[in-house]
Image 1 (spheres, chains in turn red, cyan):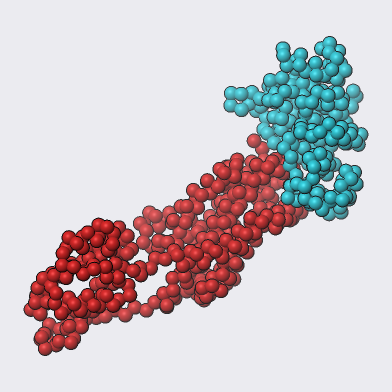
Image 2: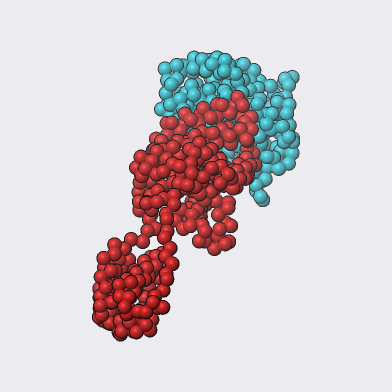
Length: 373
Length: 242
């Protein structure tokens, strides 16, 4: 224990003197949070629409007006010609083409259930699904209006009793995007920086040659690893705190659950990613190698952590692959605890999985650390 | 020499794949002597030394350092030896005092002993004025002497030095050798590699390694006699050319 104290003291002295690490702990989380929480948005706000109106009737006019008045849509053009509309689609000027066939109104009043055609540019799947959803809702609305306003035309038998679904947005009532993103980015940022910092730190000692001097002392392998873990755990907690403060001050994110729970889980998670960072450092001789290997993991972790694509909508095998991804658990915990106010029981699996990973990574780091070649 | 042996080496060999870096070397080092370990670049000096201080695992052969086995008791050996590597190995972003504290702590010295040691080193090297300065701000010669002092912070019986005077000016080299004599007077055994042949003259005994083998081992005077040479330089060149 006596030796570890000196290892930790030395590490803290170096960290405090390293201006890069200080900046990484303070400026980086603030900038990234502000930038990414706003920019990395999945919201579909601006769907570009072209209407091919072959009917030129009262109904088609009303539909055009309704769509035009809606904030989600920008009407790129109304035209008679399908070819012209396809041209817009080709040159990526429109996302959806709505075609109203000739005699639409006539058929409608005859009760023949005429069909509208919706052509969707599905290159951007998100935009396509959400956009067509919006549009369908508007069309249904118009449909309903006519049925209600002109009851004479329809006998009571035809009048359908429609069940309407009213949705309530729980946990993020105002659908504020940063509220959803900030807790995730916060977790991602902490885990990511810690992997890179720890991997680089040990490799730097190898490059400079100080590690050889350490290896010729009677230090035990686990003492060396713990001597690295503790100081960088503190760096991680500072990062987490800075991130939470920024999120609270800038975005006023709700903190519904217990902060000590977030920090308790944060400690487990940081120890886990530190273990991975140290493990990487054991296999790298230069900082360049270390950063490349670290990047390999970091890229997979980020793309499969549920920050940008919900884990629930991934294929089953991919969902299983997120289990050994500490980032996925961290993001899940911050979102659950901060936004939903979840307690320990709700996040027990995140604790268990991360705990197991932490033991595996750190044991492997101690085991693969070689004092002798 | 009736003195006790502190290092014994029997057929010590290190292979890297097909390449034999150290080829069955055998020698003894006696207590308190300055043992020079000479050889051209790539002759296997550093590898041989690393096998003795536990950084490298011997492929075959046996040996003892301070009475401890070099294969089974490497961690115990590390408590008894000091090592100054070829690469400068102090923390440049720590101050002089902080480096002494750190290595003292790592070798398990008590807080009180670390304090005493710090005072001792600062006085001996005349570094009181720069005690709180970062090591990177010191001239190379000072750094090297500090590294030497710190390698002995735990009062080891044997100190291994791997080309300690590489890249320093003649004046500092002289000072450095004075420090080595000083340490030797205190009863420490010094095991030093070098390729400055004038330094070989300062050693009690020298061994000369060529291509992984020890080709000569004796006092500098006897070696010169044996090879009919005026200086160690000549001895070395005769050996390497053959």
